[in-house]
Amino acid sequence: MYRTPKVAVVQDLSGLGRCSLSVILPVLSVMGAQCCPLPTAVLSAHTAFPIPEETAFQDLTDNMEQTLRHWTALRTSFDAIYSGFLGSLRQIDVLRHLIQQFRRRETLVLIDPVMGDHGRVYRTYTPEMCREMARLAAEADLITPNLTEAALLLGEPFDRIPTSQAGIEAWLRRLSLDGKRSVVITGVSLAPKALGAGCLDNRSGKIHFAMARQEPGQFFGTGDLFAAVLLGSLLRGETLSESTANAVDFIQKTVSQTLAAGTPVLEGVQFEPLLRELL
Ligand code: PXL
Image 1: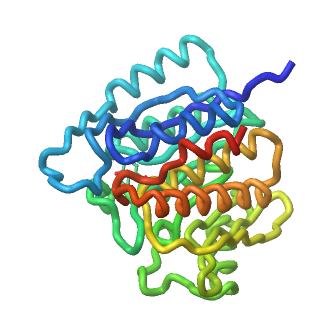
Image 2 (image 1 turned 180 degrees about the vertical axis):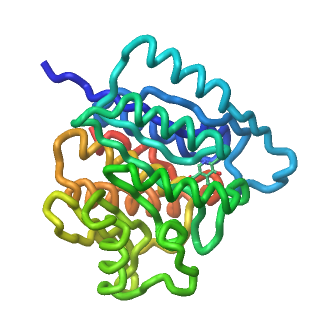
């Protein structure tokens, strides 16, 4: 009988705008993995919504520390640990302890170093948080930065973001820390009207690109959706390049259908009608 892999997911829960736990939980479930949420914060809406001064933002750092104590006392275990949007500096420390406590030889540690997009840092991320995120990401087996986050991790200015295949390959190699971790860079475009991701598998040392038709529009939460599909595929036993291709295809389809439906960009992509494709 198939035993479903168990994943500790360290992410926020945002009421409006499909992102983080709201998309990761359903995706991992349909892909046959058990999602164990460790919520970092509860928000009324993700941080790009207007009227930011009215955002309800409940920081859950104390709750995370207590959860870690409880999970440790319960001697539970995880096949994967997956983190994304973090709400404070202290949370990066909690995540570090979670990894130390629960990592076994076969545990997959995926850190999505969520910090910004499109050449801008998210407004809740301080420079110190970005530095600590980079330090923690060095512990990961796999990271999934977009190009903005790749620049932040490498300490490169945004105007040095590469546009050529050779340039992206060089960044993938640098980000792999001499083959210590695998890397998927998202939001890569190497030809007009094509968008996708480049990946470096540290086991084979090989680099692959997965591309799909570029859709006109940029949506929030697609990074979370991407990482969730990627992780679901990996936990099913697919290779990093197959999993990257699955995630690129799924995002392209959801964006295309969302554009056809004409729903607000801030609400994210309509992935619900396409979930069955991941079954
Ligand atoms: O999708 C990244 C993300 C996750 N969680 C929150 C966010 C964002 C990006 O804006 O604001 C709360």
